[in-house]
Amino acid sequence: MPHKHFDERLADLEQRLLAMSHKVEGLVAESVSMAMGSGDATIDEIYAADDKIDSEEVGIEEGCIELLALHQPMAGDLRLIVAILKVNSDLERIGDHGVNIGEAAVRLRESTERPPRPPELEEMSRIARSMLRRALDALVHRNAEEAVAVMAEDDRVDGLHESVFRVMLTHMLEGSLTACLQVILISRNIERIADLATNICEDVIFMVRGTTVRHGGVEAAASEG
Image (cartoon, rainbow, N blue to C red; front, side):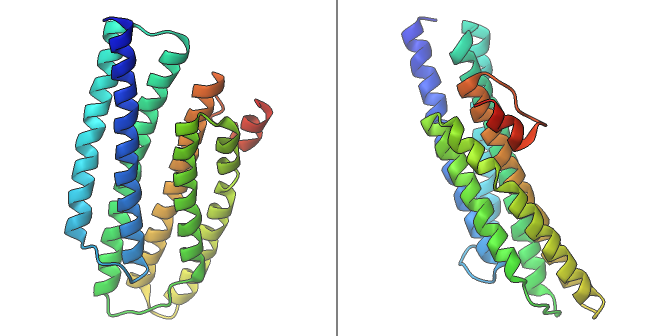
């Protein structure tokens, strides 16, 4: 495969990944709006969006494997393809968590129980969505420093999730078991979206610096700078 053609194919895969990321951001935004009791999206629209994301994830993966098989890239090109593969998988999983949020929102809406939605839920959703958006910006701009900054936000989401869990346990004791479980499920899936945004940041750092910071946390990522 001529190198110019390889470069074009690689650039096309990156553009497809970015287009897919916009679809994922939209799905998450719609599902979170459902969970907060606002927004116009239906669960069928959430399912349809997720189906498109799943299809694109397969296509991007196949494109990456083809480039690896035919060209055997080295150094920076290899790291970029590996990063695209990893981010591609993370985005598909974020879409799945968005579906989970939408489904829980439907069950919450249909429940006769009406426990208050804790304000921490909206705050953690705002942070998680911001983390996802900034992680993708770091990917586009090859910005490892921004990726490290995004990773530092994950602890805030974890803390808010724990707070939501404690609040809902209190309401469970008052008899709102089913609805409270749905709120906890929504919170858990938002927390997982933040975790996957952190994974994307780790992939950005690997792509830019050629170093692996998984499992070392934000301290390891910052020290590699």
